[in-house]
Length: 126
Image (cartoon, rainbow, N blue to C red; front, side, top):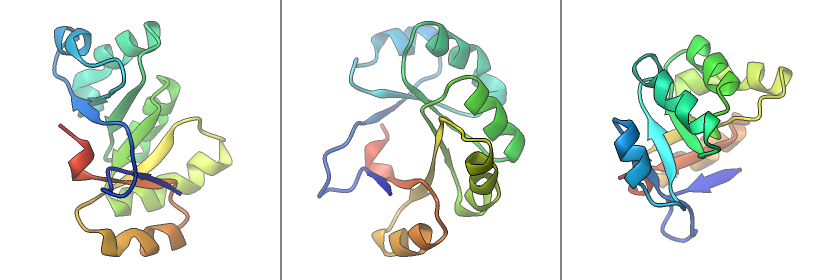
């Protein structure tokens, strides 16, 4: 299971961006965070074309299919969306990993039992 943003585990930071300029100003070690895909697909294409690792906030299976096709490294979503997307991602061997956004570590075990790829704590996002 992937765990990002927990204080015990060193992990990359996710930088919210809202323009190509924001992407260019981001740190090389950061993961670019785009949201929502319908408004940021051109930024996703820019990241894909320039081999910049990025993540997308998704809210539906359709978003997940496009995020994977655009080459997102991660997709972030709520638990209920992850439960719908994860079996499809496994069936179609998505390269994109699904992360559930957590505010409290007490839910990690539950997410693991549901076979979701991983979790991300809000502390990892700026």
